[in-house]
Length: 295
Ligand code: ADP
Image (cartoon, rainbow, N blue to C red; front, side, top):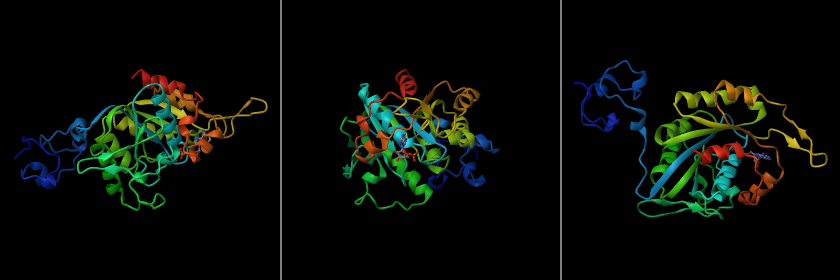
């Protein structure tokens, strides 16, 4: 029997004994030789928003490895877009290394009803959900296996009452593992912003992230090269502490038209430590911000 009924994409919990079950469905129609008629399109895997959410643009912030400033860039983009008059949310998908709430000075647990979870709001009104806001003690580690972590990220999308959000920034865990895959499949991603440091480009880590976006058929809106240079406060000269990179060349190779360069700025970690990242007022991410405003 071929799969001509309404496939629920969940063979384990399906009463229809179609060929997918008999032949061992791999849930990956694009790479399957069985012509069962299941034909799952990209849209089939998207999880719908709940009745309390109206999120318009979901932007994933990705990096090839940790420590390059992905959460910092997420926080700055969110703060700037909120200042520009948009309603902004941050879904912190970095479940085992959440740093978003601290940068905004949010330490209170979230509240929930029987139907949904309510995000916390920052001083300027950015809505935030993060694994750290679920813990009784924010220094407790989350020691879960990949699929459970990916499930929580999905719930942050399906079970949180986001309200009206023009731009939702998803702070991804570093790399190209389980969670990025879940986010790219389950959320209606409008585009990806890749954060790198000059060394990343040398080691080709950033190209892995760009290629993952390509394989998932998602547009890369731009690259942010963080810690790109340092401006000497005495002589105003730019110093390329980690060497000058080839970020423009990589962008051209992959037809990415927007590159923003963020300097190393000692004010940033200090503001984050105080939970005041929204107070940062330099315009380093102008190129990406303009791109977002014109989406
Ligand atoms: P990631 O999310 O990629 O792991 P973070 O955003 O947590 O990285 O940044 C790592 C550290 O570097 C943090 O202490 C942060 O305050 C600091 N940092 C990030 N970007 C800058 C910058 N442009 N100038 C100075 N410090 C920065």
